[in-house]
Image 1 (cartoon, rainbow, N blue to C red):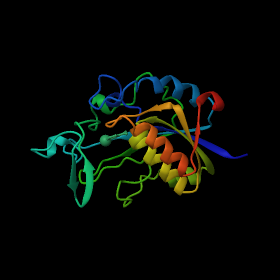
Image 2 (image 1 turned 30 degrees about the vertical axis):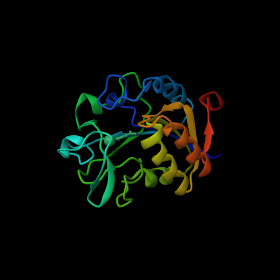
Image 3 (image 1 turned 90 degrees about the vertical axis):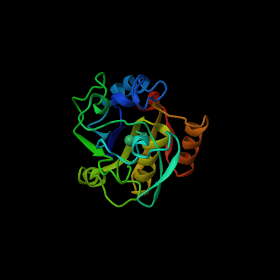
Image 4 (image 1 turned 45 degrees about the horizontal axis):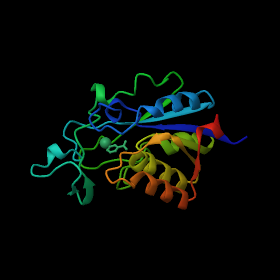
Length: 206
Ligand code: VGL
Ligand code: ZN
């Protein structure tokens, strides 16, 4: 039997309504995640885990605003509000999420000089988080992905999973997008589908 893993991306307080980088209706992914969790032997999570001076924060770039793009250590970087600062409430996984069966949590975005949208690698693909090695060691061949946000961390995680050779399934109703531009989420879904990722629905998977 194909070993499947569920990857829950960044279901953290700061991405929920009222959080520092709120994703519209982001809280709606929690119920879907909890339903999915019950159906998987292997569940992992990623956690955006920034130091207080992270270079993706607009606060670190005087004269620049949230949503602008700047160069950060040689790479283009979109500026965000301060979010998911290590050990703060905003960085904690959502309290309503059933974390009992999450075997391992992979922190990312810890280097102040580079962001990490993907749960597998930083945005420069320089350093791995260990997620790929972990999944391979567990014999995983198929990954099912949900969480926040569809147009950033979910998309980059899914794209890397597909390139790494996992059969990759995106749970459309189990994720929500930031939509800095209104079409970002639908564009992200199109790019993922074009890359060979299956766009599915929790009802087909539970
Ligand atoms: C995310 C922007 C900045 C995400 C994380 O989880 O999608 N987006 N940091
Ligand atoms: Zn972040």
